Length: 398
Image (cartoon, rainbow, N blue to C red; front, side):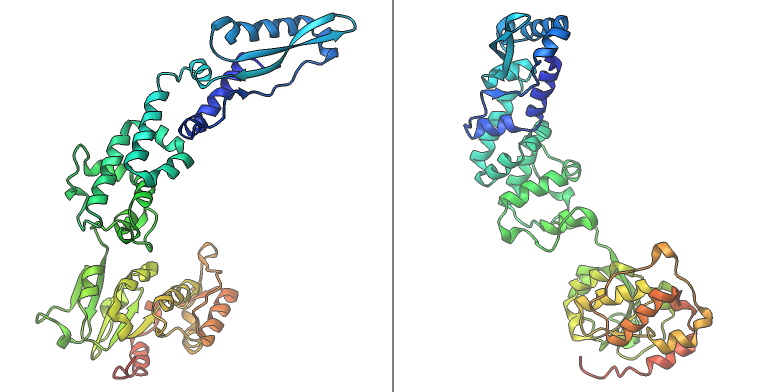
């Protein structure tokens, strides 16, 4: 049998869901709000007579009938063969929003939340659908809501500011606040900003996704490269360079060939090659190369480990640069140096279907999936590397 505590829990759950705010903003018809409950049957009335009487008394004592607010009990007369006429609770309902709010002690909280939602929708009409869909998010962030809206105003007036968070001059808002509230700010900014002020290719919060999406500067990862031809160096003797991706995108190095390799040591020891550079140490970070447009006009050669993940990275490279060629990722190399292979760990094997491999590469990939062989780049003798490099004619147009 339902108790006043059960009724309070159900009313609290309704509040926590945000439906009360939602209904108020829409001038809906949520109230009167009825609570379904199990009613004592004829047998219970006899077998648990005392308990039923106590239950009715407890419900009544906590109801609007006694307290002047809260839930209302609707009774019905029941003719019982043994007990005669009985007056039993038939309905439980909160007739008004005020009744429910007072019952769960939210009467003082509601007006401020309600007014905040109205004022927000008035200033930012595009946020109204969001508020109606996610009223609980306003409830959760009520104490910082004014600061969140201040950030929205700033980005509306200065879209894509091209500044670091530390440089944003927003009254009563510091850069740490934005950093701590990126998730909710992302939702609000997506709703209020025009499409031209949002980078659709950047999402989530990892890898500075917030900064990239809304045109902010951030601590970009550095790409390390070596100029394999000293003639390419803008400063005599400077051949080993690390710089942000955005700067490399602007520096169209006048080379003809770009090697990309996973292994740092191999990148450092890569042999001198005319009109060529090597970018190294990326691993799955090859996706960052997509921001370098001039790579589409260069010969691109990828050299990865002869294991399942090496081919996975090669496939990712081709997703951005379809003309990518592979180096030392073939059956002859695997066969010649099979004695140097190790076993690829079971929990580190790639089982994906790779869409961007050429048929010979796909065959080797499938073989590695079956044999679990792994030939790491640094195990291949450098003399063999130099011999295979001679296959590539760097003077050919892409």
